[in-house]
Image (cartoon, rainbow, N blue to C red):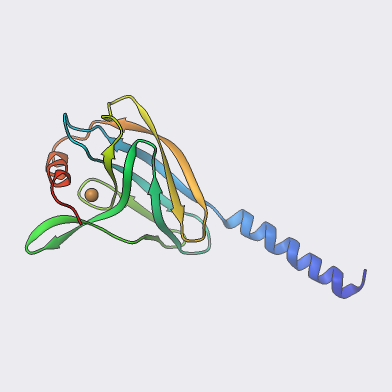
Length: 158
Ligand SMILES: [Cu+2]
């Protein structure tokens, strides 16, 4: 093996271990909201933690618990807080983004069955680089402002 080939191999090895060691993207404290009686929709919340060296873009989410899943945010529209679909959630390198009631959330449409406190559902997030992250997340009761969110979810939705 020539010196040049050795050199290239060394670079390749270095690159592989480098990206492996810094490729971490985590989901913390994830949970889904228990669905109100008769409500067809719910939402999931979590902390996205990007410990990698690159910007992560969450572009989609899936769960077997709901027929349709969208990424949502709450924003002022016509003087009212409304939620709407967004194409992606950006998580800059070294930062955490919090998905919480009244803010960013993973919207669960057409629940396969009601979400009950104490159950777990599987949630998968997919990033723009093609990686997927699947977690079992608990179903929790979310009080207060969430009733509003739940009402909203029952209405027409873009
Ligand atoms: Cu929503």
